[in-house]
Length: 611
Image (cartoon, helix red, strand yellow):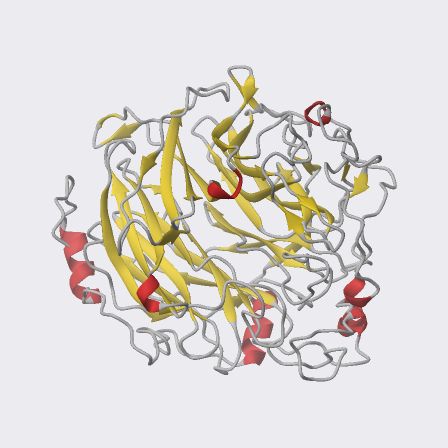
């Protein structure tokens, strides 16, 4: 790429891997299949074998968020109800929370305008989009986070969390993350543990109100709560040793712990924040000057595309941190005025910070994206890149009918992870007309990349797999999980169909078949995982992570407005992390396992042994 690299990785092991994988420069995609589509190293497997893999591999599922009753006072009431279709119930008054959380009203709502906040606490019904993280000081300590909906039809939510101290068997603590209840919404859940076991929750709180039709109105000067910021990129820290649901640090220097704020309305709109922490006490045999540095990345939509930024702060053992640095603009491809987004920062064992950047190149229209990688060797002060990883990748539409037979939107295009002198990129391709997951690797800091391979091994090519998420284990094993629609919905008059709530699914503007969708193909959803060795040699076939298929139409939040039921939401991503020999995933399900009779979107945690 013509860039100067400050740190060159070279070893006999790396050279042998590069030789074995025949690393190549990525070529531009054409109107044909994206490179790698159809190239499945482990071979295809039958649906019968896939369905049996859940039991065969000893996978466990725990329905987490249906175990307790959580409530809070929304800043903006959402008086909409699209039921009884799809099980919608609208906002429901709190029947009595048992989480121990503060159900409100809150100090941040004191200066709200007349009519705000809601007059009573509301029940948290749905939980979409999630992340899950394992404490590096205790592999049995896990924290998951997700959107915490009080009004699915109005897309009305805060962020919530759930916590386990026994490797995911039980989850005794859960509730909304406090400190940001004065905003209308609080979104994009992602977290990271620091080296001391403090958990940092990244947040994206913002304000809007509803017009009479349910459309969201973002108007500077007319926010429901003038006593707080219009929008922010923020942090809440759960200090090591916290056990109560309210045990969070949400301020820095006596003010809300905001990394970036804007009160300029639509002219300045931060989005897609992500977080990573450098947990390396030494680097290349020397003390690491960036030990416990917290990196926060986000993009800012400023009327001239979206630009990616990074800010950082040094964390302390008690869960506090230093001041956030000034924003640093990351290198981008195809000119800085185009749309650049979807940042996934990761730090390798040598303290190098990497992130991919997806570029929606204007000359390619809505068809395709290019994916680049940036990296920094000096704690985020300066950056190398952009390094091309994949070009011309065919993507699903970003909103409304991204997939046939459904109304939920597509998620983030790519996922990223770092290993031992290796970086990995997976992304979704719709060049075949259906979603496939492609994977590539680089062993020289992103200068060259392996020829992509297809991760999903479904025998039928007319079903969708989407939203990949990568993790790397301590032995270098690579895990990639994703949503999967290869299995047909349960048949009519079966217990599985009843428990899946299919009878509630009576109206779907994007489905041409008969409803309820008994036996429908490419409709219901499961989750899957594929494992690889460091050099991308597959370890077996795809494994089913979800014990029961579920209907994505049920209680799916309406992303645009309650009046438009053709743009619903499962989340842009879901969680994946590895602790020792255990791989943990967190994902949505509307199935009723006995604890979810309303078929709300619940968070399920799957656990599987790493091969």
